[in-house]
Amino acid sequence: MSKDYSRYPHQYPDATGHFGEFGGSYIPPELQVEMDKITKAYLTISKTQRFIEELRSIRTHYQGRPTPVFHADRLSELVGGAQIYLKREDLNHTGAHKLNHCMGEGLLAKFMGKKKLIAETGAGQHGVALATAAAYFGLECEIHMGEVDIEKEAPNVIRMKLLGATVVPVSFGLKTLKEAVDSAFQAYLKDPVNSIYCIGSVVGPHPFPMMVRDFQAVVGIESREQFLEMTGELPDVVCACVGGGSNAMGIFSAFLNDPVRLVGVEPGGRSLNLGDHAATAAFGKPGLIHGFKCYLLQDEQGEPAPVYSIASGLDYPGVGPEHSQLKDEERVSYGIADDRETLDAFYQLSRIEGIIPALESAHAVAHATKLAKEMEHGSILVNLSGRGDKDLEFVTETYGFNMEEAEQKLSL
Ligand SMILES: *Cc1c(COP(=O)(O)O)cnc(C)c1O
Image (cartoon, rainbow, N blue to C red; front, side, top):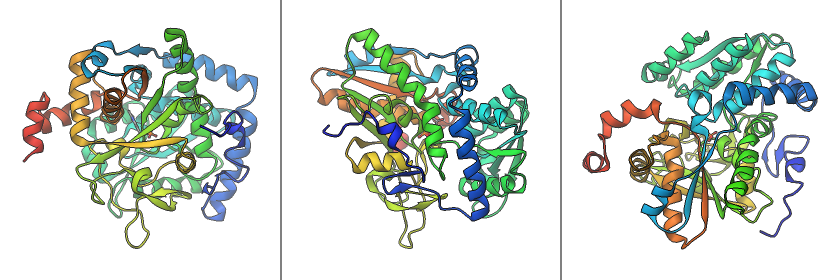
């Protein structure tokens, strides 16, 4: 590492929301006016003592932070090579890292005097986390969701409704995530005075990639301290799965200026043919999606390509603009774990450590075990972004209860 990253979080994004050539804000003027208001509010409110103290108290008393760092010594011994440590974001309230930024967005909404949170959701994970934040702050919540996803993700739809959110079915186009984003933006533009749009990852127009990164930074700050305290050293590698990239930016941000290798893990899916994976940083080209510039998996027309992953939280054809810049600077490298490797890690971590990971997080574990074998010693800190409860039915019905059963299904 040659560059000095000590001032990096203050330098990026710049005032126009750019991370080098990436990021920015490519949206209609009426939406830009609203984004500018959110940026201004965020930059002032989030720096006040009252905001910082209230968020800190929420982290401790409601979310259950700090989440522990755990030395997975049985897994490390089995794999051989480097020692594997897990940052247990699966133990965060609601079972994943997403609540870290949803509570931040909800608190900002409260300070801005908003009455309603609006967002889209694909698999329902962001919708559930945001509905939780809305319930906590006593705000209304409106979640836009494609009809196809509503059918597929029934348990999360039930959770959102129990938490008091209105789930708005989206019935145009492919009736999935992309249309849900369009629908949520339209709803937001109808009432920007009383409502605020809350995005689910480090993506979208400025200021969202910055805001979500800042709210997720707690993961990195905690784990750097915890790891130093446990081992007296920094980890050699920090590894996290990347969909839009929020859990990865959260943990990476604390280690940017350290001599630590940072590795994002993308889903290799069923094959590396376009349409069979979502390895955006690895195979994408710069392009535009949802109002920002990033590495993007594109078809021949330059439109976002169809993507696939066994983990619904990772199947996004774009990636956060900050990841795009850190890739070009070669500060972060991007590896791949395919469906088979991911399932193997899912079963293995369950059996050997008693931790059932989310399929998203299992990608990071799978890649970490590959790296551990290559390294003779040293340590790898993995961000275990969420728990696997949401995936149990799907995995066991589709692939069975262990890797031997899964191998048979996979080879059909
Ligand atoms: C949504 C989700 C992800 C992917 O989102 P990022 O913004 O890339 O972190 C990863 N893990 C879990 C458990 C999720 O719910």
